[in-house]
Amino acid sequence: MTAAAQTLARFATDLTFDRIPAEVIERARTCMTDTIAAATFGAGLPWSKIIIGYAERNSAPGNSLILGTRSRVRAPFACLANGALAHAFEMDSLCHPSVNVHPGASLAVPGLAVAQGRSKSGRDLLTAFVAGYEVMYRIGDAARGSGEKIGFHAPGLHGVFGGAVVVGKLFGLDAQSMANALGIAGSLCSGLLEFSKSGGGMVKRLHLGRAAEGGFMAAILARDGFTGPAAVFEGRFGFLNTFCRDTDPARLTRALGEEWHSLKTMIKRYACHITAHIPVTAALDLQAEHHFAGNDVASISVAGSDKMVSHHNIPEPQDLAMAQYSTPFCVALALHRDPLDPRSFSEESLNDPAVRTLARNVKIELRQGAPGDHALVSHVVLRLKDGREFTREQREFPGMPSRPLSRDELFDKFLKLTAPRDRAKAERLFAQLTEAEKVADFSALDFAL
Image 1 (spheres, one colour):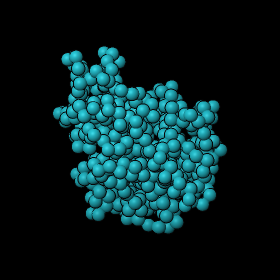
Image 2 (cartoon, rainbow, N blue to C red):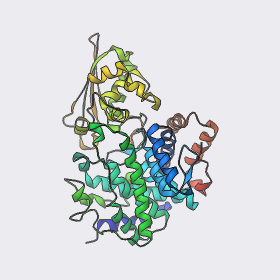
Image 3 (cartoon, rainbow, N blue to C red):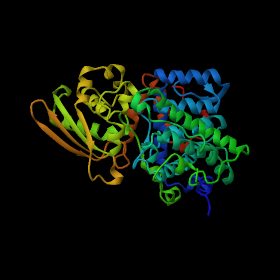
Image 4 (cartoon, helix red, strand yellow):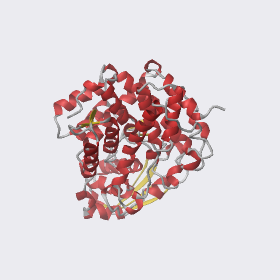
């Protein structure tokens, strides 16, 4: 029987731009554009500056830009830094139905690092991105979210495989070398969820940087003849049997080249974990409809997924990263401040008595009977101090595949994240990125806003 890594590798190496449907290319462009804005914003954050400093001190001069800075470093250090920057403030993309991946930080970041150093075209980069997405999604799908149930931060596990495919594709690896890259990547998975329980949330940002860096390493080692286990996914001591439980290996290659999972990309509008987006949207819609202030709210009940209950029910977060991971805090903040502005998620907000008081009065419980592909669906009951009560069953938020952001909404987010940098340069870069397939040489684009 052919190992899944061989099948995935053959798909990735054979994929050409002309075989990819136009709507898939559009989603890939959107995701890459969004990622560059998220990383540019992330560069200004305190924890990001530590990682940037590490990359600048330890890398020789190179061709790959650390986004949001003027520093050019070697590609593996750019992968580490930019992956962490893209994930630095909960603004980077993911997918729905969720398989616990962050495609922008995992795929666009290493792709850009290589494209800048090797003068790759937009068509090259988009093709590599889609190849990596289709492989990475299927790995996450086969894992069935089980890695997080035992304490791993799954994007740090899955992302390294996607990054390896993107880099391998841009370097022109053959199918056997690509399979070796996947085999090597299996020994570079990392990321624990303990930050959600005992603090130290800066480490969450690092997980996607390490995934991008690990993907680069795996591909380059494979290019140079290094080998990895053939049954890296389904083997007795492979990824699915070691990092996960209750898996479905058949999903690794199901409908490969026929069903395009890249269409499932979600773009965030709020700087918080995706689990909070549905109840935040519900609370904002109720506030707009009934015209009440945050201080008018007595309590809120949110019935959501089992993961919301087990991982995101954090009524008193200890630090900002934990706050962004906390559904009660994010819902409370949304009713007191503008959640569309990432700067609303701040130390000031974390210590705001009004926000913290309301967060303690947000009750999280399990929603019974939610369909498996709508795990984000939430039932929200909001009670005011004057006795009025409002209810909403929320199934969507702006940015989901079923409700994608318009070009204007994406542009608005791009400008918010790149402000207060040079707006004219930001507008020009946005226009170029949203027509990325027309770019002949990605190294010629000016990302230093």
